[in-house]
Image (cartoon, rainbow, N blue to C red):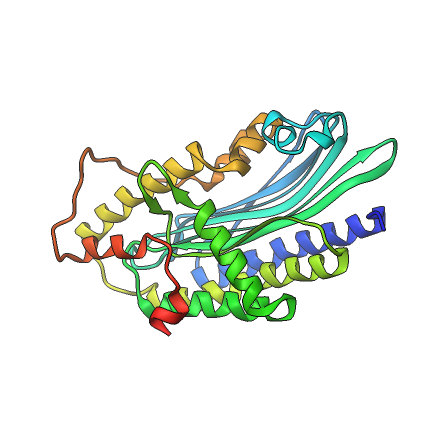
Length: 307
């Protein structure tokens, strides 16, 4: 059965509520800073609310945005892969976040949950869900990696169990692979797109991923936020943030879609860290804590290897 306006409104209500809940949880975890909200509109259709927390005790910058945007023609990055949608109007809603902690021992993280609907002559011709979450440590801890992936596997349980986790974990590893560096962006998580088999089941999975993000990330925040660090760790964090920027600007389809569809640049690029550095030909000392990271930046069966 084609998706109705009421179905779309249910997804929208969930997403705005999710943004509110995550903001409240992050403010509590930080203990000092608060999110500032920036409401915006888009000439072609729709708008959103971008929230940014800066200079906190835990988070150097945390950005989380809700968007509800629409248009009469899909950008090239979308229509090229879905030629059957050429000429259709569209509407896309989603929540996307990237958190850059201050402490190098606390990983950067990203999450996104979204819904897309294409219309022609007032009727839905296609709709689907997408999203996921991933973790980018600078100094990895095996217990954090295990917790992250155990949480991901548990939320997949009602939606295909191990097979769903394996598929979407693999998809995450492939999507967040930085080809020009021959490494993954981090230790992965879940990624999915074009989920359109059954609206209720797919919407249920979207909610599980959105709600599961806090279960996956907040315990790591509590374990690592007060870890002592020095200038060496800080410099390595800023260097590795450069790799994060490379992925987002060169490879990320969401960034490309947002910019090509006339989206708001400030909101699209809120994922970029407030401070970053590049260094030509940097190679960590053999056997150092920094060199250890390389072994984590490749697809691995974490639950079997570490569990």
